[in-house]
Image (cartoon, rainbow, N blue to C red; front, top):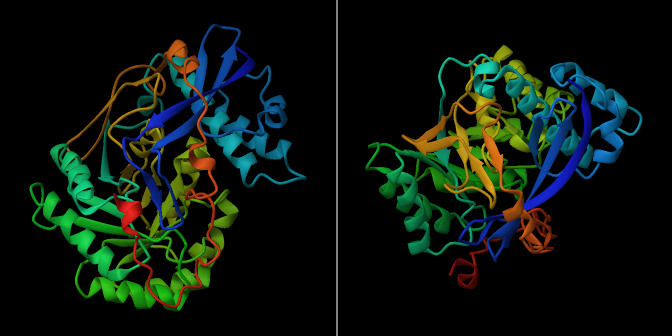
Amino acid sequence: MRITGFTSLTTVHDWGRPVGDVNGVVAGGVTEVPLLLLHTDGGLTGIGLGAHTDIARVFPAIENEDPRAVVALYDRMLAHVFKTGHAGATFGTIGAVDMALWDLKAKMAGEPLWRTLGARDRFVPGYASGLDIALGDEELVALYTRYAERGFASAKLKGGRDSDTDVARLKAVADTLRRNSPRPALMLDANESWNVKQAVRYIAEVEAQVPLTWIEEPVRRWDSAGNAAVSRAVKAAVATGENLVGLEQYGPLLDAHGVDVVQAGMVWGITHFLRVSAIAHARDLPVSPVGYNANPIAHAAAAVPNHFTTEVQDLGMPVGLTVDQTIDDGGIRLGDEPGLGITLDEAAIAAIGGVEGWRIPAGPHVRPARAGLRLVPETVPRAERS
């Protein structure tokens, strides 16, 4: 079986609420979900999720190749873009292709991907994470009540503007999750919005009232010395890595002891996650994949020995996607459908109109001018939390 072509589609995810973080918010709560379909001469189609704007440049590296050689093809794609580099949008494209290749490999074997990857258990422990900074108090509790009803006992909130606000929100979510645990695990995600001293001071104020399991991305992703300084100064673990694009970017962070929970973005693909997990395991560090639509990396998370917990960003799925998994007992229970277990309704997807989604200038993918430069707390405007 050989790879013969590709198709790009875009569906949407309707979150039913505004979503975002300290850097910005998608107020409309509807975001785009790019889909990559890899076609073969054997009639099977592989599905990858995530932006793949560089597909025309990357695809020649895999065209006419056997998709079962997925790891070799991953390295072939990296080699194909050697001179210009593989970071940014190129790495996202490679990740989407890699996901589709693994989907094909498992489909050719007639089994779910978690089986192909050697997992023993289909259940993947997770934590609730609602991208919730724009929610008011009642909406926040209502959201995490739905997670609690699915058995979750841990949650990550978005924050970083005002410690008093974050403490109140963390306490409210903890109260909601206590139906499942007397001591819920709480995490706070600052999305690279602080400098080192600001991070240490801010976290100390939060930890004086709320125990944190981890603080996520307290400073810039490449600041290995800064992340290490934060880790030494606070009680919480430092979690980071979701925006690192390649193993070479983890080296300085690991050498500096600047990360306690090693993260990898789901959009960067399965091979990347497996390799990040391996280098983390060599340092006796846990690994945690950062959430994305349809939770595709959960299949790989089930197969690595140092998986800690997987981020679950929503309880629903994008329009036109049926995914063979259930979210219950505080995690993701993977099914038996071959590959990633994703079925597409292309008619439903074709009927969708265009959305700005993540790309709007006020959204969380655009870094604000004052990030890392704020001298006084900024409370979340009430208009953004209603």
